[in-house]
Length: 133
Image (spheres, rainbow, N blue to C red):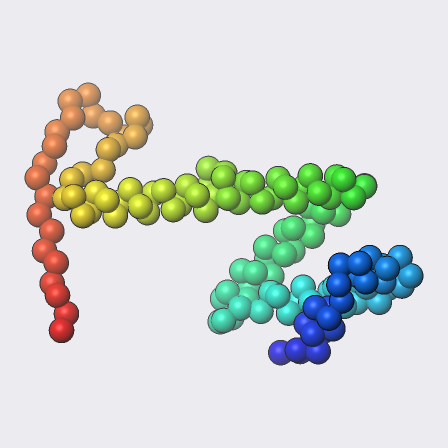
């Protein structure tokens, strides 16, 4: 782990980074790349691979932008789709919470329109919870 690159990037203020980008874009890109590589290191190799894949996807999408404003719009779309999209974090959280509530109540989850039977049948469910000592 190269802590020098992380320390170097975080030692700049946003104003200083802006000035560095204007005066020496090569050095700015060098320390920014090192900081991104550092940020992609996970707790285990699988997490590191997942983070690097995500960064690679983001970089590929950002290369399409011709202006800084287009880059900002692409980043907004990435964020909103990852959080609010159909397979986003919010949808996964809602699904997990719904399953937890149904498990705690002992009821079957409400089926979606595709899964629904013409005649809904509610079956009693019994869950056994064992306390560990």
